[in-house]
Image (tube, rainbow, N blue to C red):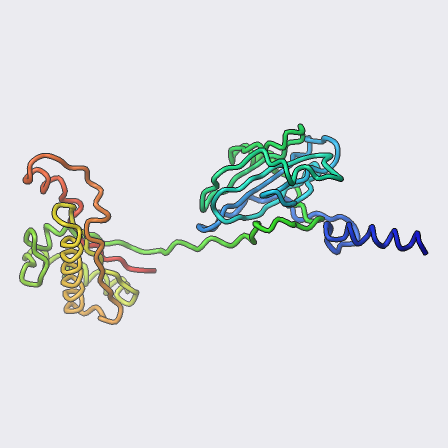
Length: 289
């Protein structure tokens, strides 16, 4: 009875480290990693098949157990962006010194994937590897699934949000409006023709039925708040003109980004700066797909 009780107690101690599988199993063979979600950090920790060493490499994240990598294994997990410690140790049982001795801590950036080769030299120091090299070394490796993570900072990896697909039609504000103007009375003859042609194109292509955003941009000359208001006046005017040309008002929104996205680096006299900043003065008609 005493022997049975000791055996049962040992089983209860070991059980949390392993999954409910009858025997250690491994996950799928390595495939290229999907991009990290924009609000997560993705870690690919791996141990090449020829990195034999002596026993499993215990992987620790912020001082807590994540995985036990055997040769030919990898572990994929995600973290919140920020400062984290990582390390790998062999033969650190039963004291599991790796929980206390974290030799490497760094600021991990959002949306990034880090490829890290496990170290088995006793230093615990992770080896950050370039993606091309890591992909070559990961070929044929199996995902480590036979032990359960205890690292509280580890998150389930989420799929990255797909970037919106859209078409941008850009018209120079210098064509559309007299300088400094943004109302209907400030529209030039050339500007009216440009809007008429754009509306016809949108209707012919069927894009007039899509969601449309009219975005007003200005140059950085003047006060930011005034530029924001000017950009909004121009966007509102172009929106109204498209509606007059038969594009449904229900599909069109207008907004201003003012001079916040001005990219030109200009200096000199006022006249020179006005000429130099011409690309920044624009209205963008964005058609969402």
